[in-house]
Each structure stands twice: as C-alpha cells, then as structure tokens.
Image (tube, rainbow, N blue to C red; front, top):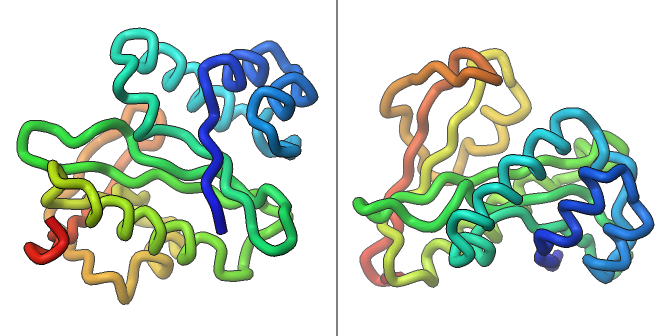
Length: 170
C-alpha cells in the first residue's frame, strides 16, 4: 500500500467534476468514489485548509494505492498537522468496491506508523459515529481507548478514541 499526495490542483479538479484531470494531477487513476458528495465536501475543506496553511498539505488527503495491483482503493490522511498538544486525527475511507478486504485496517496501520515517525506527535485520535460498526471494528486491536464524545455538524454524534504514540517512536 502506498499513499499518493492529492495536491490542491488535484482536489480542485475533483471539485470541478474532472476525474480525468484530477487523476493526471495525482499521477494515479482515481475512481468515481472521489466524486461522491462526502468526498467533495472533504476536498472543499482541504483546499481551503491548504490555502490558509500550506504546511498542512503534507498531512491531509492522500489517495491510497493497493500494491502490487496498483489500484486506488480509497483515501486517507490526517485532519491536519499536530495540534499544540501533539494530537493528530486520522481520516480514512475505502471505496465501496474495495471494502471488506482489510484495506481500512492497512490504512490505519500505515497512518499510525507515520504518526509514530513524526517528532511532534504524541497522540492519535479517531472519531467515529456510534452506529458505524465497521469503523469501530477497524480500530479494535490498535490500542485506542474511548475518551469522550462530540457533536459534529456534518456527522452528528461521534465517539472520540485516542491512542498514545509510544515514547520510543518519538
């Protein structure tokens, strides 16, 4: 599995509805999943985020390519760089055509490994709707502990889970 950065140009092409142009910008064949309403909300948010803070680009949305097949199976990244406490929040989504094959767990594993390799990161957060059994199952076994809940304007009630990055990784 490899992660391919989605530049502002690629995300803008997606917002324009041009999958072909976005794929050229990204250097990989993106799927129609990248044009769904949920994805378009994400690209809109990330383009604005990168415009306001260009340094956040290396933290946010990436296309996820399954290897050796070379097919894009979803997207993943963080909501942004670490906050002042060293916390980053994971974000990942698998194209429905590729679900139930272990890709979400592989994405999460890769994101946790990346977080552990970053000196400014001490905690990784995941927020999940209480009714999202698949996502709750995905984080099990990774050491996440439920630490609270929040209300998200788009997603409603979410449970907050966190895991500490091992001291030896920092």
